[in-house]
Image (cartoon, rainbow, N blue to C red; front, side, top):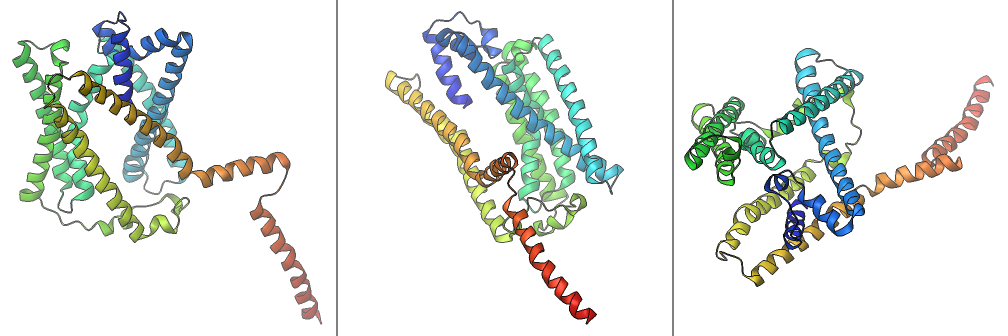
Length: 351
């Protein structure tokens, strides 16, 4: 979706000759400008709704991730190993509020510092890119060292920041917000973060602290809160099904990574400066990608959750009409059938 929007709305802003400055484009104001120019106030409202939905969904995922890490991996692990579900829920809610307030204040601070959306987005890779390879190794490599992962992540961050600063100095002769935000400098920092951490973790796990972890032991070390297995059916716990899911994810993950990082960029290299026909193909590809992504993210969640959606809708209908759900009716029928049998047994016992 971002690729399709960037291509379509970016081209539209150029074709319409909108007076958008570089700083405004870096702040992400191209989409609302184009939508307002083409659709008026309705376009502005649509862009606002789209941004609101994207920010809320992303913010919700981040808040849940941070609260879960704090509640389970810090609070329950080190402070209260016997924490109940109610206690963990309370900690999670507190963390969500604190994290939300912090991120809001941090966003205001970044804006006051003059760092636009594009700058922050690229800088994010310099900061957290060093954790990618160690995490991947920890989840897939039996020899991966936990200590090595921590060392690699922090070392990669330090090397990335150093390389990022040196790149700005070499390219522009000075270090400033503008020189640090160029594509070449940001790319160097991101690549150093990812590649250096991966190499450090590989070397540490291979030569210094090799492990031989059995991933079959992973389930035994996962402690459920109050042994709640809701949402985990037989299929979700079947080892064969989990292995099939693992193969499905890894194969498509590797394939998509190769396509996006190597094949796609390499296809554009021979073209040099795009011809009219090649550029038309690029736009067509963007449109197909956008419609395909929109169809998948709209239909797939509905089909995967069709049973749950049906249960919710039937429950709402039963509540409005006053009809008992089928499960309650079956239980009531079983109780009615058991009562006469109990009465006969009591009469026989008295006799």
